Length: 334
Ligand code: SF4
Image (cartoon, rainbow, N blue to C red):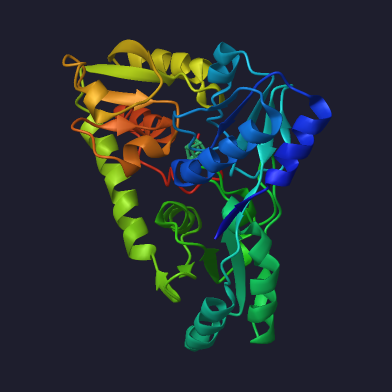
């Protein structure tokens, strides 16, 4: 079960006495966020707004919405990062899942003995960070050497985002296999692409583990194919995402300059939610580059190629007649 650190929300309101507050978080937590809003309304008799727009990560906090609403505090729930605050308005609130990883950790550690991995690394996302130490001890008891990679920037030790992998990438030459704690193909597949090592997803709900390198390969091939498809585009739309933490106008302008040099006609587009439906309105554009979230093109269906920034750099190399390098084997897909 997921627990929101409501105590921190209550104590912050008691201490700071805001005139109104807003709550937001990932879609999976919206029900709990609504319950929390009811409790706050009852106790404090101040306006409490639930922001119904998406909040995919700490890159997507909806600060703009909080400003329009005029709230004093925005509590962003469920995106635990190494920072507790953003500016003077946003307070990050933890949400942890108390599911027990013990059974699946023991099962995978015993059954994978035959693979002879001696040094492994544990990685997870924000909801399960508190389980890492316990799983480490289980693997160690069963004879593995376990490394928890150092956090950097927004990332805690052992934590990855869908586009940022420092704790896994920095030690990959010494690691035989990665174990991702949690039921997230989104995170574990990218972990496998970046490290190119055997990568297992430990699912504590079904008490199952799976090696996800085949899925990762498909994702990687899809990303490479989009680059090749974009080669023939005459007109390319470069999309600047309007979410605060994803805004990368300078990168967009740099790519525009480089692609114009290679003979491409460029249209700069700004939008908040980048979906196939929205892009179908741009009929004269042959391919898109979006500099917002690098996972938009790889993890969603689009009728035309939609490249991320690393894919765009690879496209430029192709256009110059240079070979494609391993553009996804990097620490940060930006
Ligand atoms: S993968 Fe996308 S949503 Fe997740 S942290 Fe990166 S930019 Fe944000």
